[in-house]
Length: 215
Ligand SMILES: C[S@@+](CC[C@H](N)C(=O)[O-])C[C@H]1O[C@@H](n2cnc3c(N)ncnc32)[C@H](O)[C@@H]1O
Image (cartoon, rainbow, N blue to C red; front, side, top):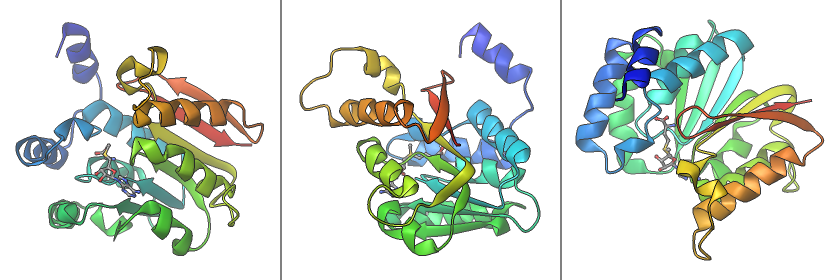
């Protein structure tokens, strides 16, 4: 951690003890621990949830549960977060932390692809955190906006937050013909900025967040 990063950590709300433990255990046990949101992004997600006050939120890509628990901490009583994770080997790990958290009761964990599960959850979402497979971001967007022929899963005023949209800076570098991740993220960011139904701003925090509001 460099000096400026440490300053940001030191002068932001400290990380909850359980989330600190979750981060450490993810680093010890998970195959790609870099995927975790972590302290500052987690606190930002919690803050955005507190400010936006969604009654019903969706997360695509739970991983070990850090961002889900961060968002759940900001949810009001009676509000709920549906989080979807395709890797069933993570389920036991995720549930062990949800069970220990005072906010775990607000979270519904679904195992499977969000592309199959989200449309079956019924109704619309006030807030969506998109953090699944980068190659699927355009498909998630089409699904959420109802551009895949089914009913939209968001409404006027809904906010989508898409993570990793700068992809370690690869979005501004020459793209290899077989680099499907970068190609899909470029396509996603273009779809969003050209879509008159939404307004958006890219926040260069960590690997980049695209904040998108449905008009
Ligand atoms: C970047 S990680 C998520 C990190 C997590 N949101 C956090 O902040 O700690 C991406 C996760 O998305 C999952 N994933 C990939 N494709 C998915 C899909 N179609 N539906 C649900 N989860 C998916 C992966 O298995 C992986 O665990």
